[in-house]
Image 1 (spheres, rainbow, N blue to C red):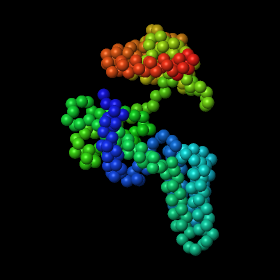
Image 2 (cartoon, rainbow, N blue to C red; image 1 turned 90 degrees about the vertical axis):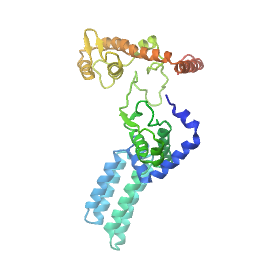
Image 3 (cartoon, helix red, strand yellow; image 1 turned 90 degrees about the horizontal axis):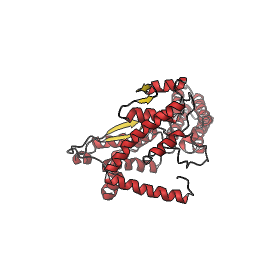
Image 4 (tube, one colour; image 1 turned 135 degrees about the vertical axis):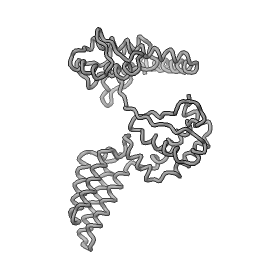
Length: 347
């Protein structure tokens, strides 16, 4: 097992050389394209991009300067009405960039020096590019290049007999991993080092919270809101018993999510037994719960037993690995101190 922090700190000089080399390999436009794909905010998200592309298409199709300005005006009002300013970190910045293009068009038309349509098109294109890059800064450049170096630092030599390296991530972060992989496939220093090229494995993000997320400003330190790797059988039983679970509500049903994502995916039998019924398919389980055939009073006990069975395998594996066992004890000490400091509440 390689820990990223330990590998990086073992040779910081080589790490930063990797950052510099990666920076030399990618033009700024390439890093901007990666940034635009990320779904992290505050960055330009997908909703704004098609709107601006439509504005450019409408402007190009306009027969005169007034038509170009009208296309830009329409896009500006639509972007601000939809609140896209929040996606670029500052509504004021987005408004400033887009309205400046409209003002430039008005000035060009008023001057009437000839070439008004081309001047307006130039302003619109410049504004759309600037709007798409709002939120993109030097910090994003450095972060992207450091991510490449992070992946390199945990690289596996081609001569190694170990399994292929997998870069598991949510779809939102996949563009950063793909940036690193593209560098490893083409950079001469990496090819000379003979590192295996990892495979990017996007996974959908899972929400396994057991209770309704608190409203903004509400306390978030409920110790029963989530399962943890350190939970024993009594903890699992208590937490799932208290989990949110409304009859027929499949839009947010933590026990149902646990059944599908933990039991059906990782239990030895890949099945969930609820009274006389045996489920091996998440769709069938969800359908029965939605129709009322399956009641929370039946689902919760079955899920509790099955989830604890999966977690028992984790407990055994942790105990079998001395370093993991020692790490668990340290975490437990920290939790105990935090609990005592918090007056008995789990933190």
